[in-house]
Length: 154
Image (cartoon, rainbow, N blue to C red; front, side, top):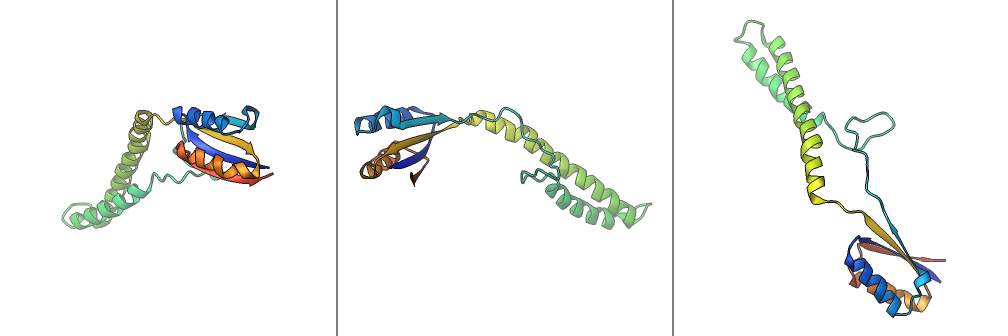
C-alpha cells in the first residue's frame, strides 16, 4: 500500500485529476485534498534575534553610504568643515537614502506585485493506492499539471 502526495494550484485541473483517478479505480475514500490557507498578516520587515527572513534593508544603504562618503570626502577638501565631516555627512545621507529606497521597495512595490499576482493557495492531494496502481496515479497527476509528487510506502 502506498500514499502518493501531490501539490496543485487551486484550479480546475485539480478537479479533473480527482475525477480521472476515480475513473481509473481509485476509491473516493482513498483521495484526500487539503487546501492551504494564505498568509493573513503582513511580513515583518525588521528582523529580530529569533527570526530572520533574508530580506536586508541595510545592504543598499551600506553601498550608498560608501559611495556618498567618498564623494563627500573628496568635495570636503574645498568646503569649510573639511573632508572628515563631509565624508561622515555623506555616509549618513547615503545610508538613509538607501534604507528609504529598500523600505519603499519592500513595503509598497512588493506588496502591490503580490496583490496583482493574486497568489492563490495550493492544495495538497493525498491518494492511497495499491502498488500496481501507483505509476498510473502519478502519471494522471502529472498529466493534470501537478506541481510536484511524492510516493511513500505505508
